[in-house]
Image (cartoon, rainbow, N blue to C red; front, top):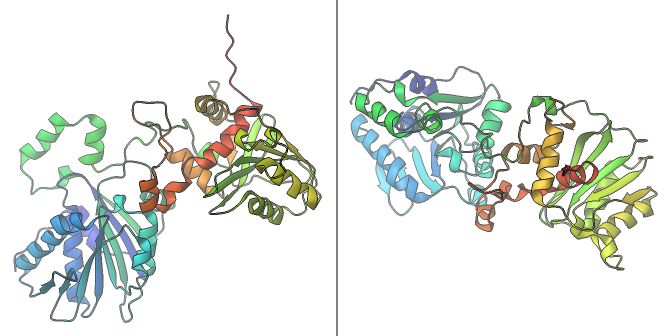
Length: 425
């Protein structure tokens, strides 16, 4: 067996320094930092340490698996002189000690439900949907395995996505993010790094060589949002005027619940429901706030304007009638038509932080989809158009369908009550 010399990040990746039953680790690095090499080595070591263990190696596409990860497995197994059999039909490596590794694409989370696994390895984990990640985490339940491991290797995310959320912002003791700069790989020739320094711009070099997170504010729709805009202690009062900001999309229906104090907007709840109706969303609001005594102002997308028709079945009419029937005192305040999207964005950003350094927009952390939009909604490159996900993207990433709608629900009322007015001379 050939001897391996591990880099510092690789050694930390293999070792566990906590006592939790499940270890979740991501090896994030630049080109040539040994990401796949390390993940494959760990997978093989687990098959030899725990006879009979069932492992799964997955990626967004099977082509990526077969051309990259699987070939690295064959290379490691030859170097380590470990006997194995590979079943091309089932895409499975079997060992003499009854351990097995299944290779599978991860674009369809529902197809993973029947698995019972001892470990999971994910190639280019940043390209895999968050739903697949958590589905695989729930499949770590093979009996007689003393410690489960889910690990992945990847380049840094192009957006501040679910890896950043779970491994940086909401870090847990058993969630480990290992940063592996290409520059630390002593096995690479000197000209490898020099060549990338010459060809890459500073931001690209930072991400794809140093393995660091990029400037996630670049291209974002919402500017200057920070922890100062997040408040855990926004208090709801049942005698205060309550506002409902609406976007009428069936899947998902997206509403925000907020109040306004001294020109500042306080978003403390959101109603985001998949495959629903305006009437059902209205009932959800009533269920959450059954004893509200103050006024209720319904506002948002003008496309649901009940003044456009005498029908009682338009969106705002449905909400108005449902709330009225329950005993609330609702009012509808909307424009005759929707303003340009850039006008809404300008008004929203002015509340996030104005030129005088004042913040007049605050969000409770329970508004997870509004926060997700603020941190990730971008313009299409080189344009002022919002980069909303395509139908194909939504098919492969369930979370993608929540992008855009809740931001609309929040930005319509801000622009309505505090539009950006340009004084012309």
